[in-house]
Image (tube, rainbow, N blue to C red; front, side, top):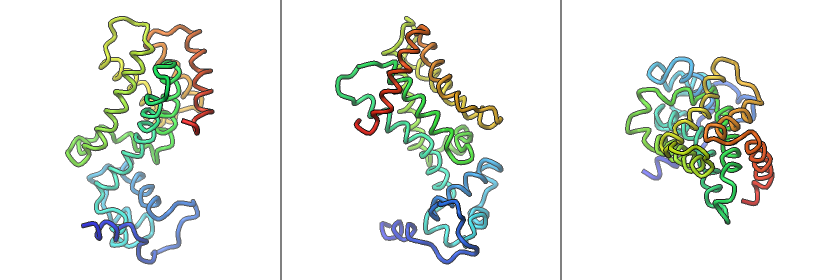
Length: 229
């Protein structure tokens, strides 16, 4: 099994057409091509042959990188959530916590919005596909749930709203962050929306305009120091 996995990761067979000039590795080209097809026509209607043809490789060569289209989609979905989750874990593990939970929340929202905005072809639009609710995608759903839980804990720590429970806080913040998926799909997403959404999350948990402004400044310092975390 290990040899088979390693075999898939090696460079594939010669291409049917030259590599793209986008600076992507062959594996990244497969992911990008698959994302475009999954978003435009769905998982069920997309075949590995179509993905290979879009990249310009033989179908057999695609299996050097991924065993199936489900494995490709799992990787794409995971890439849309894991960077934010890793930052969330770093923030929660920072020495001297609880520190400034409002600033941590603001910074995490900015990073998550950026991650979702950069995900190829708005792949996060497929979060609710029926297929994604199956066992094959359990690891992705677990990571997304872990990120949502961090939002809940930070939101509760920063909260000035009595009675807003942990579960509801987490769900509402996550919904605000993931509004960028719809905004991106409709072409209404603007660069400034990251800060607008972060501020909205803080207002949701009851912070005043002054507290939101202070959190924004503190979050900016946090992100500047990010390499030292």
